[in-house]
Length: 601
Ligand SMILES: Nc1ncnc2c1ncn2[C@@H]1O[C@H](COP(=O)(O)OP(=O)(O)OP(=O)(O)O)[C@@H](O)[C@H]1O
Image 1 (cartoon, protein in one colour):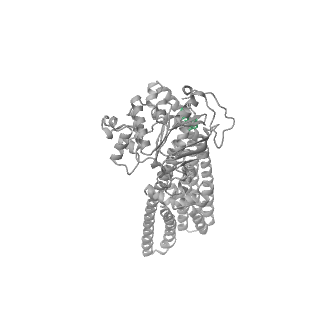
Image 2: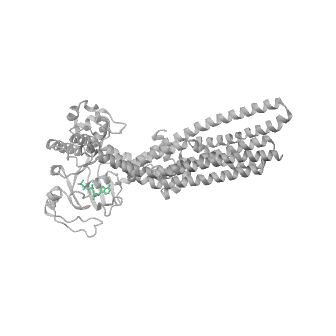
Image 3: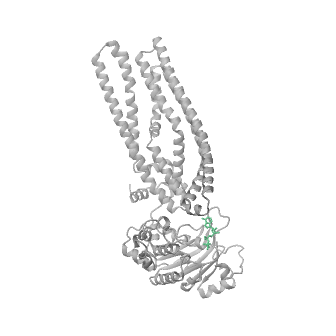
């Protein structure tokens, strides 16, 4: 199923309780999976397969207790044909059941993967490695769903039926099977507990080991250049050993429990044969019933033994399922928003406060400013003042803890994220180029991008000549994160990407940090041209060159808007020291501090 159809399926689906709790019940999420019918067929086939399994004990009873005593060859042939046909059907149903389960598992991944990806893009808490882990969990769930363990679970409700049949043949058989099933159930629970405690101990250490590994691999050049190779390997090995210790311990325990389970099963089967022989000798049952009981007991205990061995996998799948339910709830409940008219670009930031997760103090406190369409706002302030944070909030990457940001009067929450994205160009501080060719890096995932658009954006960013000078021009592979480009080249291509399309609001975070004076001049020209096309620009900078293109300057300090106005008004204040601006929600205990532009920028 495509992402579009998954989104359509999810947008038609509106769970009630989830909206209140922010979590989805397993049943609710299951009902949203398009391939759930396949799963229902799996259950139907399981019923038939389990009923057909009773044909073999029935055959034994008939052959040993009736045919042999009556000597009827015709009956033997008829019974044999019937049994072979039934077992043939059973095998066909089993093949079909496995294929359907495989289809359901694939449908499950096809349904959940786009939701998890959406959550890892739209939910700030799930961005980065959290999103990658969620995707690994989805694959783990898919593998578990397609495994024989799921069939064992589906078959489990037939256990009482088999035990009841055994009781009907003779109470001893029923009791042996019941005791065996209970013992194996206890072992399954013990195995589950061992797995759970292992998971609790191992997870934190495993995450640390994985993070270290990711860091080393990603920054291999740095590790090599700084002479950290041996140190890095030692650190990883230590963390990995720490992560593996509980796994090794738990493996030993689980293996022991599995061996005990196997011993119990074999012992009970021996007991069933022995008891059967005794009952035959006592004339309480016939040989055919003894054979039939032995077959049914084996059929009853084998899945239980399998359960003991696979409970660890099931526990892990259940944890993954719980996690995925939480992670995808918002993405699944995300309602389609009404598309708004193309904005002009008027920006209104009103009393915005933002606190990063686990941060002691807000990164921004009560920041307010507004600017008309087609204006240039330059944000300045010392390191850690909250400039990039404010830009991220305007780009709708994070939501303000308090306050509102409006584009053309509509709060960013009211914009459809994809529609808003088409009007907003964003160049982050770390340029973050997607891999591929230069042209792909500029156009991103825009399906309607044409070559003319790409070249136009590159020309506007004054990057066209620079790109043509690259080995394969626009087709030059830029490497992962643009690693084959210089810092200045990355920045210019990032600027071209921000200018690409019909942007109405362009957000640039230190766009000139890697540019030489000529590059800065070209950037100023690009900004003026964008403004002339009616685009609003908000630019964070530490370098005064961009003050010349500013209509407004916002001076931030310690997350507070100290001054906002024209450069002529604000720059003298930053030189002379400024008190925080009056805002609708003034920050408590904020004192004016002396400041100089050199000291702050
Ligand atoms: N992901 C994060 N988690 C926690 N705190 C963060 C995070 N990102 C930024 N901060 C904190 O928020 C505050 C503002 O950071 P921000 O990056 O907005 O500053 P800035 O003004 O852009 O600084 P610079 O000029 O150095 O880029 C800082 O104290 C920073 O430590």
